[in-house]
Length: 607
Image (cartoon, rainbow, N blue to C red; front, side, top):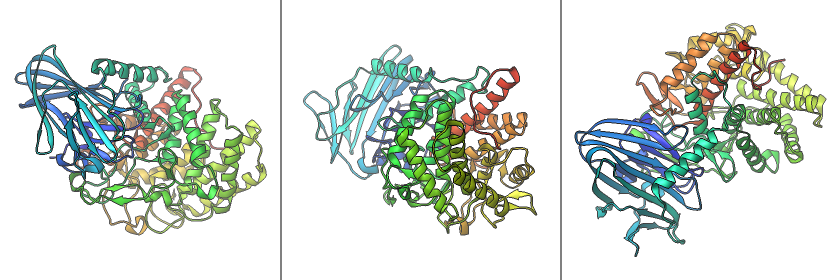
């Protein structure tokens, strides 16, 4: 029986990430990068597709787990009839090799433990050759990959598994160290497990200490946990930000909407920059800006909605037929063909992110502004064309209202940068495009009969992305058209206080009809709109719901299925966590204003 998605916790080292279940099993790990092939893929199949489980042999009465405060070091405590034992897991920050450290610690009584290591490279399809080195290190080799395991626990081979049984008493510890290196290099050096755990704790705590949160920020621990997740999803060598560390966790259990999110979406990364800037982490914001400039370098016609972690343009999509999928949700996909789509909104997200960075002193350099101008020149030529939109539909292109709104944002931010900071550019031409987009959206994207904006021109469908109109300053939150849109979304797209993206329509999506869960980022946007409208109690209630949905260690997936009471979609999801951070910061800014303090900068207000 598969664990629920919310039964997992995250480990990360700035290059990749692992998912650890409440049962002590690491069921997902890609090495050496987030988007590399998995060596543990039981998450999308069975234990035979790769896992590493360490847990008590006998019946477990209770499981308690937590992250050590301010860190990504996970502590899982198992209580049995014989005693209590803790499993402490971490991925030390990279020093050349990719390390995974697990420490079993006896806390009460004497507990019999079992270990089962199933290494299966290339997403569970390849069984490695396992042997002992002269120093006793266990080595598993397959093609370009090599994994070494060091532990004092006795191990043996059994049906292509490496298994071990040992006993730990109160006060005793048993370390395990797994390390990946390319197979043409020597195995990674040994590490001292307690020292590695302590160093990893200090790394995360030092980073989090740089966060600036208002003293009365609501749910501060959840906000800090969300910031840690955003940091954990950042690929340290380049500054690129992965949307999630997983692929193909389904939007509908048993369904086909299973996508690879181990890539860098310009939209998601730009929104993440807003959260990091708001929290004072300017180093990550600057690293992301440098990544962006490298990724979009070249002809503006080449700008894509998403890239690889190092800015790779090609993200070909393929299906892995040997993996049955999470709870039978097939197909399992790697890569994402949405990279070849036209998504006009990403231009606005990028310009908005540049504007946000500028507001805290991270001004575009000469190269960055020259590239921004080229992109704006290109956008001025194509903005009247239809696109696939924020939700990456696979049906015919349409004139999505959200996409046009973000085109307006792109030119609005360029105009403001020129007016307020003296950046050079065809100011009058930009104003004309901005005004033309605004007029067109208001004329063609608004259903006067129903008093609401719609998903696309001429459509009667609603879309939660319309909630971003007041958030980006397109219209004031108290504009009657915005108020009517909010009322329509409340009436037609809400389930138990949470927001759906839209009602599925195969003609729009180009996919078989499937119900999907409520979208957590959209729910956070509704809360932010409530805050802008002065509906503070409702805004706080939305934040409280999101916090209640988070799992026991504060992680959120992409969606929440209200009927099954389960998280669904890739996990943990940057989009969901940055939505929560944005809503909490909006509420904190309100409290600061009420107290007479000067709040940190927010997005530009509507003119």
